[in-house]
Each structure stands twice: as C-alpha cells, then as structure tokens.
Length: 406
Image (cartoon, rainbow, N blue to C red; front, side, top):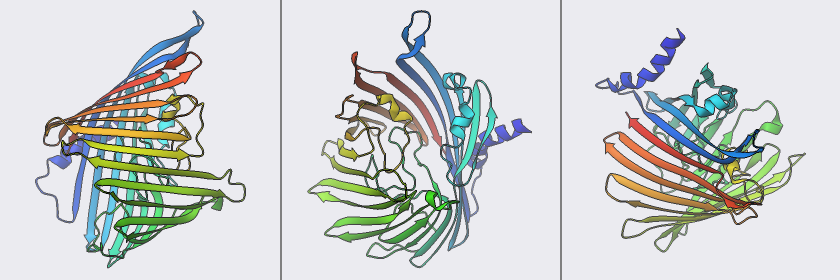
C-alpha cells in the first residue's frame, strides 16, 4: 500500500498532463524537478588520526514534485490546495540520522500539514500542503482562510515588512515561498481596483488588509494590519500589529528615481511583557535596466539583530524572521543579469557584510530553456569569511537542476 502511495504521488503529474481538457471550474498544474547537489566543505570535519580538520565532499540529490489545484465552485468562491512532495537521497541524508525529523516541520505554521512518508538511512520522502485555503471575493471585499502566502514585502532580497512568512534569499529552490495559517480580510480602494472575482492576488493592492494567525497562547499570536496607497507617483504602505510579544510598526515604498526603480521598507519591533530586546531592520534597493539588456540591482540591509563574528556558513541554518533577516548587522547586495540569447540567461549576485568576519556570498546562475516547459539551471553558492587563519572559503555548492512544468 505504501509503495502504491509513493508511485501515485510521482505519477500524478503525468495523469494531469494526459488530460486533454479539464472542466472549466477546476484546474491542475505544477512541475517536476530533479536537482543534483555537490557540496565542498573546506576544513569542516575532524580527522581524529591526524588531529586536524580536513576537507569533505558530499553529493546529494532531490526529486521535487509540485501539484497546484484550483476549484471554482462559484464566481465568488475559490478552493486552493498545493502539494509539495520531495524525495531526498545521497550524502546529506546518510550523514544525518535524524534527517526526516529535521525537514518535517520546517515550513509548517500553526497546523501540521506535512508528513514524512518514508524515512530510511539513505533516502527520505516528505510531502506537505503549503497552500490550502478557501477564498470568498465579492465587490471590493476579499476574505481568505487557511494556509496562504501573505506577501507584505516590497524589496527584492530582504523584506522587513514580511512579518508573517519571511524567506531566505539562499533558498532558491522554493520559488513559491512559505505560507502562513491565517485569516486575511482585504478591501480594495484607489484607482487600481480590479474586477472582484476569485482570482489569486498574493501581492497587496491599494486599500486596507487585516491578518490574524491562530494561536493557543496570546504570547505566540501575530495580528497585524496594512494600508497601501499611492501618492506622488509612489506606492506607499504602513503596517502595525502585534507579533509574539512585540509591537510591530513599519512601512515601505516603491517608485522611481528617474529611470531607476527605488524601493525600501523597514519595521521596528518594540518588546512588551518580556518579549526580548527591541529590534529594527530596514532595507533600500535600486534597480535599472540598461539598453544593452543588462539588468542591475543594488541593495542594503540594516539588521540590528545581526552579529559580526558568526561564520558565513550560518547563512544556511540561522533562525530566520522579519526581525532577523540575515546573520549580520550590515549587508550590501549587488546583482546583474544578462540574456546571452533568448534561451540562455545569466546572473551574478554578491552579498557582502562589512563586519568583523567580512562575510561574502557569491551566487552565479545560468539558465537554459531547452524547449517549451523544460528548463536547465546551473547554480553556484560560494561563501568566504575571515578568521584567524586568514580569508578563506569554508563552503562551496554547485546545483544542477532540470525542471519540467506542466
């Protein structure tokens, strides 16, 4: 029976693809990805015989299937259910006896909507509903209940306004980004009103929005409101709320400086009743498209919760939240992308932290469109920092990813 479940999950994309025409009131789409990962750890593991640290190489593999289901029982109603199923196998699984438990609850919110279907010594299979909500929309009013993406961020890399479901820039293989279990009520105003049916609008449009997450103890609650409006050809937003024993006050904007895009946002966290220390995070960003097709993006982050001595490898496992978006107090971001041909695109991103360890993260990317619905990616993640023995690179990663969308 268990084998049948595994095969069914992997064959569902083929079943959906084989349908000539789905009924008009529902749809299924998604993708299937295979990613090979090569990890190079320099001076990462102890050699007990020689009494020193040695270099280590690990190869890992991931099969990632996603199914996106939409049902429109009425013009004003929508049921959405997106299933994310992944099979991990290789060196990281073998090196982590508790690998299944480590990944099981990472992107869950209040409700447990995930399951480890198989947890072996060499491979693990995990599935979860990362979108599951019922939505009602009529006129300018929209009400959504369930696991959803609440996208309050404005900037490209860091989002201090994203107090419900912050995401990490390094997690490139999760394009949809995490969701939150919540009740969201939105009312649309302004000149950008859209016909109110049950389409999916994760980004906030003009008007007020109120969100509340379920909680057992008020100390764990997150309740907040956001107002978005347009003034002086800029889109502005203001937010206020309560999140886990902190009052949150913030805002952001998006507009243009000449021909360049100009964005920014920030949030201040004021602790109440033992909510820890106050915190402030803010970011600024500029982006510009040149006539030769080069697209450039610059950004800066101030993160009061960040440190100055942490190893750069902490980028991949620190406790991420809107009040702590990066391991360091300061970070500078630069990115450039260029299409060599209509089918071959490239980009290079750098994040440098001018702190004690001089942390540097380098992220080169090549993307090739093999044919319609087929993409091949070559992605690198290289880290550098400065310690007692000098400037070095403790971790390098290379990812080969093949993606089929259906």
